[in-house]
Amino acid sequence: MIHSFIFSEGKLVGQDLELEALRLVHGDKGLIVWVDLDNPTDDEIKHVLEGLFQFHPLAIEDCMTPSPLPKVEDYEDYLFMVTHAVDFSQADKFATTELDLFLGKEYLVTFHRTPLRSVTTLIERLAKNVGIGPRGPDRLAHSLLDLIVDNYAPMVAELHTKLEEIEDAVLTRDSDKQFVGELLEVRRDFTKLRQIVRPQRDVIERLARGDSKMIRPKLLPYFRDLRDNLVRYEEAVTGYHERLMMAFDIYLNKAAGEANEGIKFLTALTAITLPVMVIGTWYGMNFEFMHELQSRHGYNYALGITLLTTVMMAVYLKKKKWF
Image (tube, rainbow, N blue to C red; front, side, top):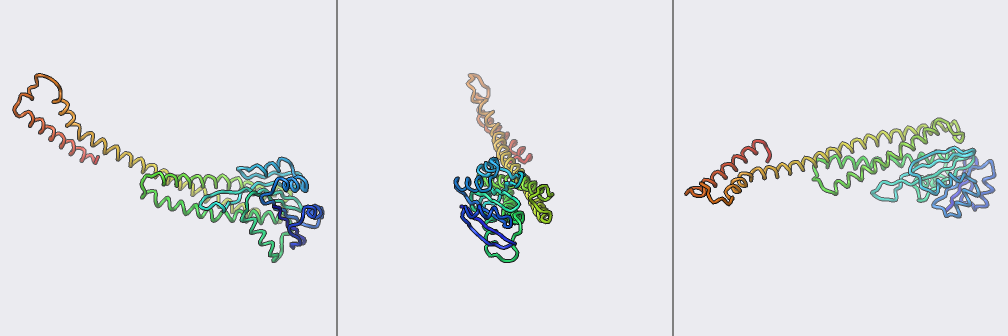
């Protein structure tokens, strides 16, 4: 699906134009064009990315092939960015959706396969046409990136809540497979978030330094603010991840301690039964001549020695706190 928005002097003057009308508008130097490709068909990709804007084939390929990490590429007359937004469509599971941006002097083209809250929110704001609108595509790009970064906050807060629940439960719950699965799932979420936030911070850092001619100097402070927000998220996620690993280590130590207690109990049980086994084995031998067998009180002696040595072994193990 193709959405288009036309701005003149900060005002929304057109929306969802036909492809031929977009060609005419794209040639008008006094207008700002935003084209959003929401899960487009192959024909729409060909007509817009290849035909209308004539983007580089490698950039188009990056759009069509999911990229695991954010990136930024400077072409001659536009800037290409790969970013990752939080995917809220998957309940109780952390996931991200790729958002690709082509930023030119007078246009912004966005590409995504699934609906994004940040894009929807910006469209709703622009549709209200309240106040001064964007006077440049770099301002539109900043608004989108700002919404993407803001949407990291609830996910970071949710993961923090899960972390606190794990920390509270790690010393009280038994070693079950379900709890181990919860630990590993939250660990994967934190790892994935760290892998996304750090490269995204590097991308924004490059824009905030003014390395791209597509970003006007007056917008650099806004991009620096974005960078600072990502730095805070990165530091928070790194700290949470370290806490999670500490909780994981405590859990493993607890599980190892429980296993040691079981082994200790079995060892103590074996030690207690050792006198019975030794004496029973000794008198169970098939020798014809054994003085104890000829004794009238041989059975009582064997039973007494067995009980005495068993009690002594139990007292010894009790003092050693083996059970």
